[in-house]
Image (cartoon, rainbow, N blue to C red; front, side, top):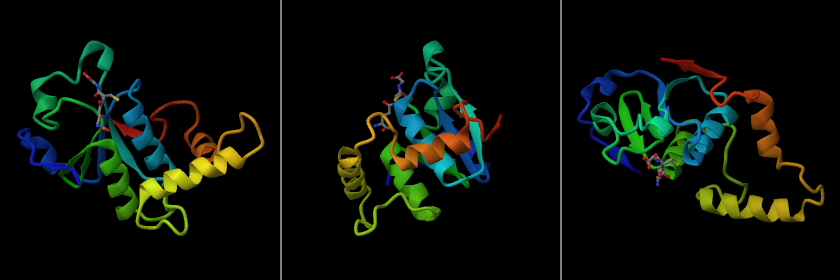
Amino acid sequence: MAIVAPINKSVEKFEGIHLYHGDISNCSMRVRMTLIEKGLDWTSHHLDLRNEENISEDHFGINPNGLVPTLVHDGVVHIESNDIIDRLDRAFPEPSLRASGHEGSLRGTCRARHRERRRDSHGDEPASHCRRASRSGGSSWDANANRT
Ligand SMILES: N[C@@H](CCC(=O)N[C@@H](CS)C(=O)NCC(=O)O)C(=O)O
């Protein structure tokens, strides 16, 4: 699990779930989908990657790589999207992102869902977990987030 001791100490006072993310970042999108899937309340800190808002002293003080996504959960800073998703799935287990029989491993779940989709004969129909995310999230990428 990628936990960071931030230089920017202000985030250590954050309560709840705060996500530093970008609309054009697929790593951020996967974390947003996880938050939506689990129906979690979160605060959005959107960074415009086109304008290099991630390249700032403030953000380097939170994520030493200057990348998104960065999750701050009750003042603890997490980087790396796969670790963030895993962390969220462990902290908020329902609904689980793990396939039954693969409870220990998100990678196993990804493989199982990939096989499921290949078996699906409905052409472009998205997988069930994607349909649920789009129903609850609407069209906006942070429709269910609190904004700062
Ligand atoms: N391994 C990292 C990769 C993070 C990453 O590369 N983020 C990209 C967006 S998907 C980013 O912040 N790019 C900004 C830049 O390169 O300046 C993760 O999975 O979180």
